[in-house]
Length: 360
View: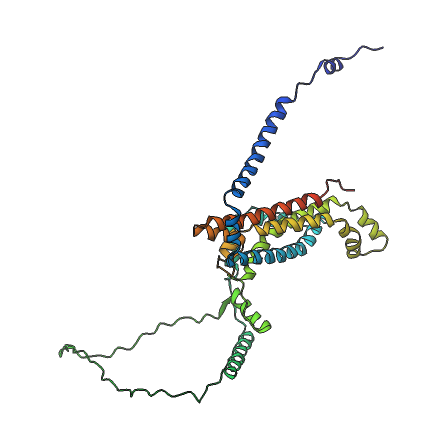
C-alpha cells in the first residue's frame, strides 16, 4: 500500500471549527429585524380601542376610501397582468437588440421615488397637442343639444305673478372737475392693444375630456380624477408584475414549447396550450403582488390625483388626511385595513406563488 500524500494528511488532520459563533451572529441580526416589524405592528394595533376603530369606519369618507381602493386595486391588477404576461414572455424567451436597455427601462418605476412618478404623469397629461377641428365641432354640437334638452325640461312658466318693478331713473354721470392747461393742446390717445398669438393647442387631458364627451356624452378627464388613481397605481404595480412573470417564464424550460412547435403548433398555440397553463402559480403571485403594491401606493396618487375627499381619496391618502386634521384613530383604522390586507395577500403569494425549481 502506498503512503498517504501530504495533502491527504492535511485533510485528515483538519478539524472543522464550531459553527456556533456564525449562527449566533446571523440569527441575532435576523431576530432583531423580525422583532422590530412585529413590535411596530403590535404598537399600532394596541394604540386605539375597537370602539374608536368602529367609529372611524362609520365615517362616509373612510367607507368611500375603502370602496375606491378595492375597485382601483382590482382594475390595476387586471391591467398589470395583461401587460406583464407578454412582456415577461418576450424578455424571457427572445434575444433582440436593445434588450438590456429595455430591461433597465422596465425597472425605472421600481427605483424612482414615487413622487417623481406622479410628477412625470402630471407633466405628461399637460403636454400641448394640436387641436382637432372636427372634434371641437362635435363637442360644440353636443353642448347645444344638451342646452336644448334642458330648456325643454324646464320651460318658462308664463303664469307666474309679475312683481311690480320700480321705474328706472337715469342718473347723471358725475364729472370730476379737472384743471385744464390752456397752453398744451389736448390730444386724444389711441388705446394700445398688444397682439397676442392665438394658441391652437390643447393639453392631452383636455383632448381626453373632449373625446369622452363625444363618446359617452360626459366629459371624463384623467388628471385629478378617478382614472388618475388607477394609472398612478398601474405605473408602479405593473413593474413588479413584469419582474414576477419574467422569473416565472425563466423557470419554465423551453423544451415543452419546442416539442409543441415540432408537432405542428404555432407559436401562439404553443404558448396558450403548453406554456401558459404551467405559469398559473407565477400569474397568481404577480396578481397578488400587484394588488398589494397598488393598495399601498401614496406618492404618485398625491401628486397626480390629489387628495380630494369623496373623489380621489384612497386608503393611503385617508391616513394622510386624517393625520393632518389630528384624527389619529381614523388614521390607525385605515392603516390597519392595509396591514391586514397586505398580510392576507402575502400569505397567498407564499402558499401558491413561485416554486423553487430549476428550468427543464
